[in-house]
Image (tube, rainbow, N blue to C red; front, top):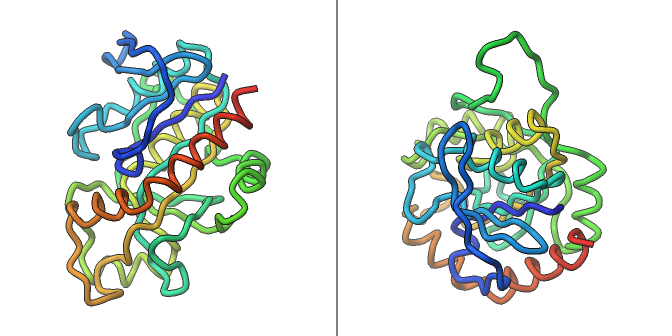
Length: 224
């Protein structure tokens, strides 16, 4: 079963006709849209990134029988050649923030959660997306400083606040994981633009039709 996790980039999208359910997990409750797929809106309304209950969201998908997950999320570009408005399917990640785990009471080491083969399959559905690159996760909710961006650009290509947590938990729960990042802005200091959440939301609105088409294509291909 396909699971989709979405955030700011889906704010203006026409979501498929799914039944809203509250799924109870050992880590809390998550609202999931259920049907031929399972879709979680990661912010559950207005929850800021550093307060998202990632363990509950991923556990809810596992309880529903999801075995492969595609996360769609907004990210900032750390490189001038990754322009705002583009799409990136990262193939590795790096984290500057604590990562949640379901393994709290035993010594367990888990391989990183991005599947190269799954990423290639996602690329075949979204040919316009750039395949490859490193995503670095920061804690949020504040945007990174110019000095932080300067350092992060040496080790990564794009920056966001959610993917590493979702990817790690997905693999802990036995689910294949890939991500599609919508590049909504240059990271702080790479342009003269002042970054705000309102700007990110505005960009999401501008690409509504593209996002709707991507969502439909993903569901059509991966929910079979």
